[in-house]
Image 1 (cartoon, rainbow, N blue to C red):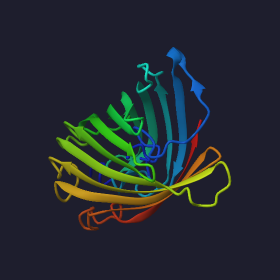
Image 2: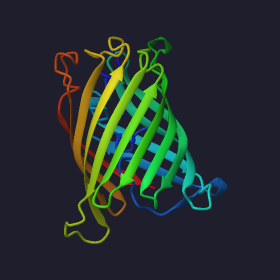
Image 3: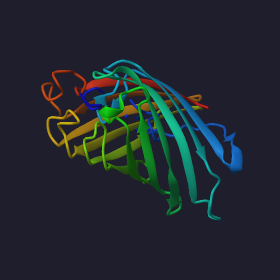
Length: 266
């Protein structure tokens, strides 16, 4: 059984503070780091580790930590910087039982067009210490993300590609679109902000049988609300996939369900 049917980004990534980054960036004091950069650290407690709509913890809670280093701006117009980091979470796979996921990532980001357009190019490496090497769980991905601030809403698109995905299942493509809408019209006290969002994605893998899927691709979507309250992010969402109960190995790991999490930024 593969990660897909045993079981992510940024998160968010729910993996809200997922392997690469968070879906919503919280406001916090800067934590100075070497070479003129700054640290960002997050701790998340989630009801489930959902990767592309499929549970990575067999519908059980996830405890996740993330630490990244962001460089100072590399250009005079303060538009380019690099980042490196790591992410860890508990996972649960039918083939191995409870396990640990440790990710490493790095990349470059830039802001253009009066900082309304953000581009992010990165590499992600997923490790599962203690799992048998012959299962081929460890893999790498290249990712590219585009975000554009339209004022009343933010739109983004993300593409990730692996040459040999989880379980030696060959090439994979993970595509996702997202719309975020700040709910600024709500009469909230200072220090509290709320954002609603929706995502729609498609996952494709070459050797779908090795990955435990009923076909080469499937759709996933999520609707949610994030409330930032004095340094904490409270996240409520509903996620689902196009995979049937039978196609998910007669389990509910791919079924529609509510997700809850709380994240603290340090």
